[in-house]
Image (cartoon, rainbow, N blue to C red; front, side):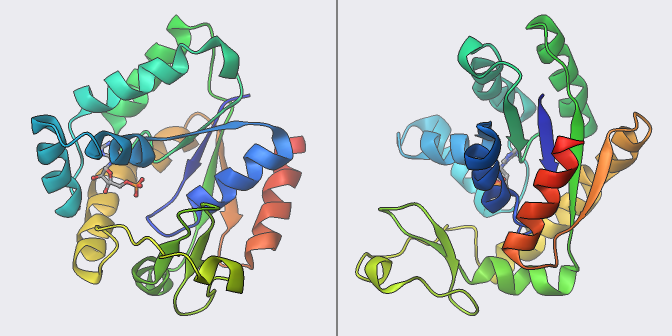
Length: 210
Ligand code: AMP
């Protein structure tokens, strides 16, 4: 089973993907994480990517395909993939189908994490993560435990209020139309992502067992 975890920035896609890794032994493929790894290389390409990400826009499809095909062709994670942050437009969705077909796979479901936009900005601008255990916390309503507090928390450079507003706009204009595309394929399952993290986890586990 391959699935897409879908929703606006701050909906909890990364958090729930991490649970799916534990609960169902699936593999998270986050294009955002893959891009952030590229940034560490400090190449000419990484400078371009950084500017685009900090402006809250989408990186070119070509760069994304190069990063993602590597994963889709990996036999070790075949049919056990969670796509997080990909696809982000119709063109990418069509290409995902082509890449999956080429490697004899398909897409089973699209989990649509539904959250009110009013809570997203606070969720994202407070987001921090521990460099050691990699867990994500929130400065406002989910502070790190004592053992993590001793480490210097990491904050993503695009997790500030100004960029978040732009990212939400990009989501509305380019990514949201994908929902209709997948509804027409009967693949969408709506998840109430306003609930507590553990309740969302249970709900997702339940729908994927059916
Ligand atoms: P994320 O970690 O998924 O929130 O992504 C952070 C940023 O990386 C986005 O705001 C985009 O600039 C870029 N990005 C991530 N995934 C994609 C994608 N599939 N297509 C284009 N840009 C992406």
